[in-house]
Length: 343
Image (cartoon, rainbow, N blue to C red; front, top):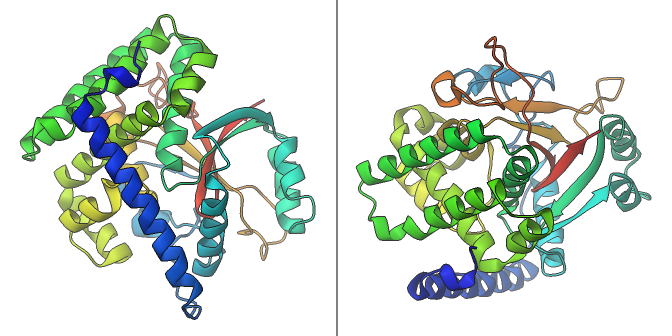
């Protein structure tokens, strides 16, 4: 059984120091923001799929076929992130599974467009599971949704496949010059959780472990290193995306926006992780993207790994080779991800 005692003291101390520094940084930034005038509205960075229901491999999505919603203005995202972070301490890393009506209650007196979209969501999805809005919500949502899927299905073929991918990710980091000490504990903790959900772990224990700060954060760091390794390995492919988002180099982007805890994810992170692990993800967007297009619709985008990454993956291909629906579905609101469950 993986627990806090299994994590090496030096790694535990490093994580605790990092979390303490992060908390101090957030508090300092909050104080600074209160004393600064509001920034001018800038051009939107994020946008939705243009048709709202496309699927693509990473090689197809930039710049023409894939865009995040133009209705996600920078000021809306910043306000959402600020509100989420204020409430973060009140929310466990991974919450209980709630009926979708809980989301309706949250927006009961809110935007009528969002209320109608939540009603439409209810036609396809029965429940959601919230995650803490601490900047790690995408990775933590994926972590729980993936492990829960293995726990429920006992899919031995998928476990064998993902194990091979994890080995490849280790080799990638080694080839890039990473010292094994910097990532070994993160990889080991993830593999221990994977083994446990395949054998004896209950859903209650999975939830308990996902709420354990050390275990949960170590698995998040595993995904961050996997993502960083994939971006660096395919630097030539990702460089135009990164330059458009941050005007930094691939190396700087990975150091400042991928590997540190608490850094938000965007489409670059998702593409890299899905390609590295060969696992598809459906992202459903709760936004106002259809507000000027007549009839309302809930948009989604399927992040499908490249063919080489997804060979043998139950989430990406059927026996006939056709693309199938991802078994992981995440709900995206400006600045935050939660888990959705289909009816």
